[in-house]
Length: 367
Image 1 (cartoon, rainbow, N blue to C red):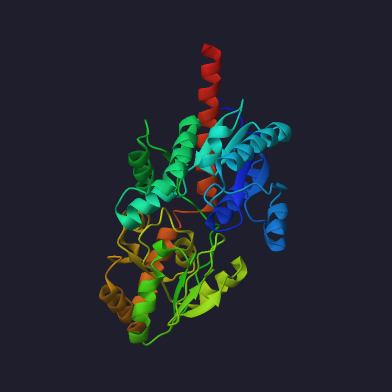
Image 2: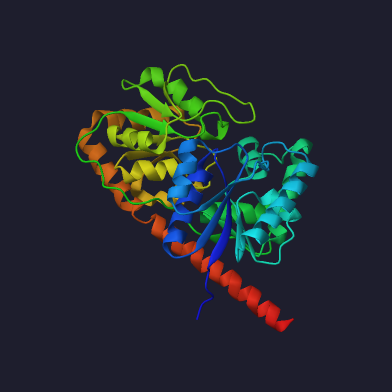
């Protein structure tokens, strides 16, 4: 009989896709009678985010501890790890799922630890600059490597990113792969115009600058949703795009439903929740030809090399000019999206947690 997963300390942040991922995971775990303490690192969640966490049945704990990628010094990160260890003990958790790897090295735990590999500065830099990270990032990389080393298990959202993480950090074994998932939605019917992109617009890996370059030559405007300014100060401007601002989940759902095409020219994307949400609405997908997108979307998307301005322009022009093709490609994306549900993600994570608990039990019995 597999070990029971009864309680978990799950860390998150309110800045980007990790929040959506962990909230869906927490909601699914609670529905399966797992007690979830959701510990928020970094900037505080908005009132709407906090209410959503409580509505999901979590015990919400706002820690005011730093995120590992936002420039905190070693002492602050060490203190944050110690504080999380104390929280795990006081919460009565049977397992910890940490989504900030650099904090793991300073955790003093007697219970199993799972670390999520969502992205990292080192693999981002390697992809975006095609070089090893500079010395200023060496400390961050070392902390992430140390965090990975002490985990009972690592988990990544795609095989592509699992392989990248394994190769970059010289891991003894590849991380588990549990694809991200979102609650299924009913596909929006009918022919829809409009071109939409979404995400952390300030992150140059999203490659939104490409869309800004091609927008004047496309008959339809390109709408973009998401923040232009990063929590740590970086900002971006795209004057040729129609910026909708940073939208909540309900507003984003309406955007997906109103637009027929979703485009992502990202150069680095371990999974891409915005793409999944667009596909669930039946948007035709135009994506960069990178390994993670190929793995996740198969033949359900049109692919263009991430540096190919003309290729993206031609793909968008083709879809804008052909309503029947938009509907056909949107249907393909919708069918593919059915592979990536929140239920599938939660069951995958539960299988991982059970395996970790089983392995820890065997080790303790043999000691």
